[in-house]
Amino acid sequence: MKSLKKRTFVEISSSESENAEDAVEKTSSSNSSEDDDDDDDWSEWNESEYEEEEEEEEEVEDNETHVQENDESMFNKVIKLLRERNDLQELNLVECKAYLRRHGLRLSGTKAECIERIKEHW
Image (cartoon, rainbow, N blue to C red; front, side, top):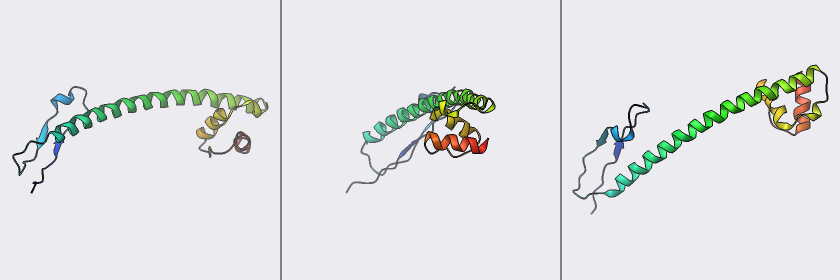
């Protein structure tokens, strides 16, 4: 009969001054003298996945900043067309959605529906 082993928990700090190697490892005692290499593999996999998630979060933040700046210029284009009473049909769907997003309006629908929503709001 194989005895149950306790999991190993690794504390990972989000501080830049600490590396993954500096993390404090807490290990629960085991009822068996057998060595289980699977736990080590899991810890390494978990750490690398955590690092990948951090990188993805940074990329998302960069993309969000870029989208916000882009939204601002597209929003300004819509406002300019509205003030000059130009035809909104020259807008593309992304530009329409930038205006709708800025005003907290519903984003779904076709370009024609979005333009109609913009006109109703204006």
